[in-house]
Length: 261
Image (tube, rainbow, N blue to C red; front, side, top):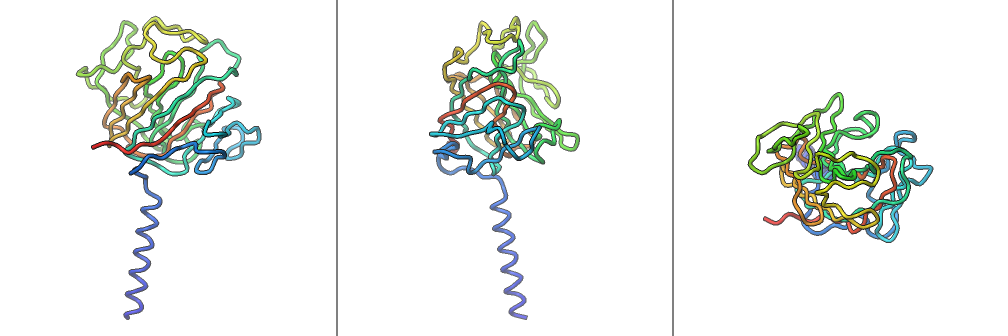
């Protein structure tokens, strides 16, 4: 009887430990994402080749993540995270998709579920947009089986697009885009154009981005200026994905910082 009790306790403790290991990580110290070389701690996913990356679309060298822009997919953290401040820099490379529209990529937050389960390409998540002229927009990416949503206080511009505005009207976003607060309503979204109010750095220069995920709130700053805030986000934790969306892009100095009380 005693041996049975001990065995039961040991199994319970092991299950508890396994659950903690599998649960979202809440950083208690600074964690560098792209330290050194190699993709340790990450998983790759491409629409055309799944978990395989035969063209070496994703590569980390000297702490810089290079995404070639060939195809559609992402580099995903192997572990989910919650309650953190993600900071770093990104810069566009030379490769484009050959079209006339803006360079496009993003950082997907709170990603959950199976690879490619959202539209055959992404994971259900909340995108922090990095496309030219739209850096800091927030976009829910649901799947057929998983709802993704958040709320924000907004005002509508002359183009009738909702933009974040502190103290504005509360709106729920489940299948539509939330634009950053000063998005140019006359912006044409053509390759390498700039909106008159853009905060991002000019083409060829590094842009600093900071994303704070505190509980169910998400706050985005670009080059030191807060541009977007959402709350009541669901899901409220998950993996972090760096998109490949037809355009060459580089990421550096990315680190996960613990939140200040």
